[in-house]
Image 1: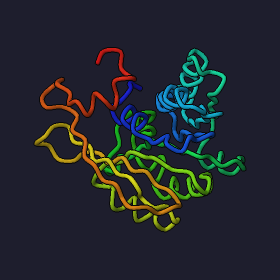
Image 2: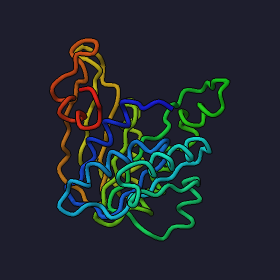
Image 3: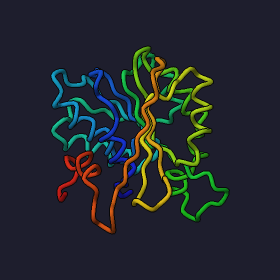
Image 4: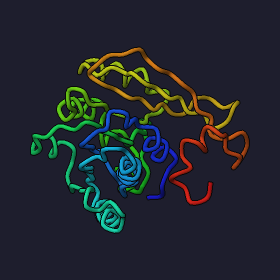
Length: 224
């Protein structure tokens, strides 16, 4: 699985303002989100104690573990080879920050590559199942950050509100100044606050990145 813009954006954008001690990455893939958060939180006055990750796919799990072990933060990173359902049933801990770049392709067609379908289609992790699980795993004052298609924003927020999770921060992502909004990055919490909505444009033209995008992600790319 190659590293996508969605994951880098979410890892760079998710708020660490509350100095989360425990972080959970749901559907970690090869561990990019966890590694970005480890790098970011390592610079805080009080670095996060642990970052747990969950990954169900065999190959992605093995790659995630290898990436964690080879990173400078290997002693703080742990990956569980389990489904979200299994994890919720077995774990009693709660997390100060939960982050997820979920599979979200809701179109009713499938490709012939089952592994890719598992990673990319929303029926591998239905939104309601994700939100319900987060509501159990999130600490009272914690936050949950997720990236979804913009067209799913209203639906996702409605489902989250059923579990008393309020959208407090939203970032709308556009590929260029004239394109439609493609992604929504949303931060939820049990504590309701005034909603902060902003827009991020990635490029002014092909490979000409905006200063806002550079400022947000430059610490996670070798060439930027």
